[in-house]
Image (cartoon, rainbow, N blue to C red):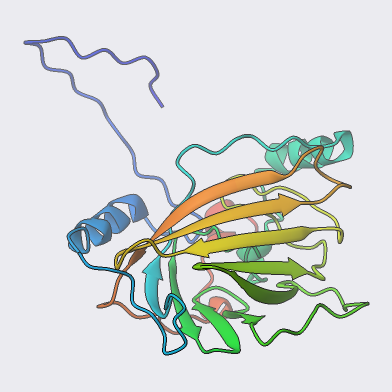
Length: 248
């Protein structure tokens, strides 16, 4: 990166910019996502509703990252662990070994939402390929068996769906590009609101009193991409990350 570049009027400035492989070993992903955003930028209309009157989140969405994220306030052990990961070039990242993705679903990829009155399901191309949130009024298990994606329940707050997730193991790394540590005390709350046809606003609150001194918040906006589809993806079939990162 070349910082503090000044472009003066009437002069030509040349910068050499290299596109680096992202998490999945794909060159120039940012350009591909920008092209996709431009393709669907002009959608207009109100948010559709289901037969029971709630906003309908069904369809394929292109996720995005928080454009103005606040740094996480971590406890000393978590700072030390994050520094260790950084010093080792994040070589232990679970997704690099085809293990499940970040349970906060903040990765900028396609997600397909299937919504029924009693269940909302996310489908995506990263392991474990799905997450389900129960909308049927059940509560969390009293003693959940910790898993990668946890146990999620959803309740409606007027036109906002609040998804509450607990029962997470401590193996995942949180938030794409920052890869924060956490414990099994992790608690995630997401608020889904669809203001119009094209957009889905998601406010994410990440709590873990054994890791963070205050909750971590992320505010993202997904774009409705009705002409796209989530594809089959088998990570172990052609995983290039270990070769790229020199892990073999």
